[in-house]
Image 1: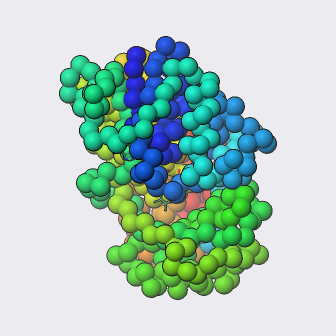
Image 2 (image 1 turned 180 degrees about the vertical axis):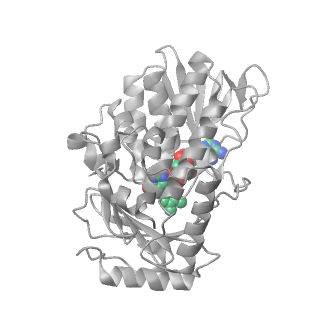
Length: 379
Ligand SMILES: Cc1cc2nc3c(=O)[nH]c(=O)nc-3n(C[C@H](O)[C@H](O)[C@H](O)COP(=O)(O)OP(=O)(O)OC[C@H]3O[C@@H](n4cnc5c(N)ncnc54)[C@H](O)[C@@H]3O)c2cc1C
């Protein structure tokens, strides 16, 4: 079996890790990517599947964390989100925060060393043709290909009930002692804080139909001036330190083509707002779906649709009762999420719904969340 993985961003590398480990030894896996096309450079917080996949190439957090500027992630701390609280990962498990720009240099040499049937090829892929019995890329053929080339610039959003569509990302050069990600509700949306070993990456998320860029910057200034539970960000206010991302929430109509030989993963497969690292969590599930389709002939599309639906529900569960702010954004977001949850008859679900989704244990969810978001509270 010959397989091409196209793209060496987080999704392509995670797919290479999972397929090298999960498929039979005789599978030949080729990673094709263009080193002149930089990966997106965000997506630094993960779920437990990510260090588990890195473990297959002998990543040890104690020994190798410096290679990825990594810190351990034991959960997510919520602030101003109808109170403050902490959602821990279940006992004994952890994710990591890591520098996406260092990932390829860490993963690819180790894959080459551990898997004789793994190869790397540099080049620009202009098309992946899976119309025939084989998949053709340039003048090479494969049985399967997984397209992990990131956002497709021509792809249109699906107008999903996802509430933010714009991010301003900046780095604070003051490391923090946090061993969790921060999700801070603010009046226009929410902000992530991701602690790496040498910096903290912040992302102010908002909806540009409701909030102007000027208002967003003024609010960033306020949050930074106040500090976050005693932590004072130290950052350059030069425009170059601020990176802007516009995004439309999106999922591919199906996870593979009609022939079942070309799959998508990463931002080509789905993108929702980055609450609780749903993206990297989902990429791991997609890899399982792909391997089950290749090896056991299990139809991948119903499983993909279920994953998409569950990610959307999961995100909306965060919004349905609003936050500490009674502002146009929070009215809009909580009303939309309540409509959605009613429509799917999920309004009575609490966080147990997510336990199926991410196959986590019930104890992952602290009483904090149950109290904040369950219907019992009547919020
Ligand atoms: C502000 C923001 C914050 C986020 N935070 C998180 C988070 O904390 N956690 C999380 O799980 N997710 C997060 N995400 C989601 C994040 O986008 C993804 O986790 C991650 O970027 C996945 O990227 P990718 O590998 O799909 O694509 P990319 O990073 O864009 O990589 C694409 C790869 O394909 C290659 N390539 C592209 N075109 C070609 C071509 N024609 N030929 C050959 N090679 C090609 C490139 O060289 C590159 O290697 C965030 C997203 C945003 C916008």
